[in-house]
Image (tube, rainbow, N blue to C red; front, top):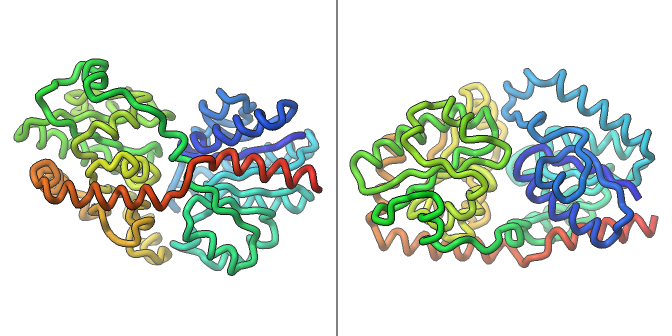
Length: 375
C-alpha cells in the first residue's frame, strides 16, 4: 500500500508526523512519501520535498514563487503515477492542496483531507467543488463538522492533534536552569511564527516591544524558535534581538512557563491556550496582501483561539495596530493585573475543552486504511 502525504508548513509537519506513525503502526508494510518536514521524516516518511520549499504565504508572495510551486506539483503528479499510489492525504495548506486534490482525483485516487481549509473564514463557495474530489474530510474543530455535513461531504471530527502532540514539559525550575534564566524575573515569551514573510514583518516589532519591557520592567524576553528555523535567521532579521535568549525545540515549555506571551496568529495561539498562558495575538503582512485579504475574509477575529471561543478572549493586534507601544501596554497590563490574568486563564481553559479528545492521528489512520481496504 502506498500513500502520498502533503504537509506544506511547520504545523502540518507536526500534525502529519502522528498520522505517519499511526499508519505504520497499523500497517508496517505501508510506503509513505511526499512533502513534509523533519518530524514526518523522523517517523519514516520519505521526503520528496521539504516544507521549507513551500513556506510562502500571502497573495503577492505566492505569485513570486509560482514557478517553484508548479515544478514541485509536476514532480508529485509524476510520482503518483510512477509509484502507482493508492491514496493521497492532504494536510491543511489549501492554496496548494485543493488544486492538487482535484488532479489526484482525476487520476482515480482516493483523496483524504486532514485539517480543513478555513472555509468558515473565506471562499465558502469552494465546498461545491470540493465535494467532487474529497473522499473524506477530517476536521479538528467541532463547528466545522456541520458545515461539511450540510455540503454533503463525508466528514469526521477527530479532535485537535495538539492535544496529543503537547507532551509532558519540564518544571519551571528545570526550564530556568536549562536555559540559564534569572529566577527573579518574569518571563515574556516571544513567538514570531514559522513563515519567513510574516517574521520579516512582525519580528522587529516584537523585538522593540521586548526591549521596552526589559528596560522598564523586571522581565526577561525569551524567543521560541519554530522547528523549521534557526536562531541565527531571526538574529539576522533584527540584530537587536541578541539581547534576548533564544530557545530551539522548547517552544511548548516556553509557552507553559511564560508569564505573558506575544504570539503570531496561527496554530501557536491554540498551543499557548492549552497551557492557559495569558497572551496577545500579533499579525502583520504586506499592505497589498492585507488589503486583498480584508476584502475576502469574512470573520470578526483572526486568532484561532478567539475563533474557537466564539468571542475575543485574547486581544488581537493586527496590521497598523501591531505597534510596540500597543503591545507594551497590553503586556504590562497582563503582567500586573491579576484579575485580568485569571479571567483570561479561565477563558483559555474553555477553549481547550472545545478542542475535543486525544487520538486525532489514530482516528485518521484507521479511517484511511479502512477505506483503502474496502475499495
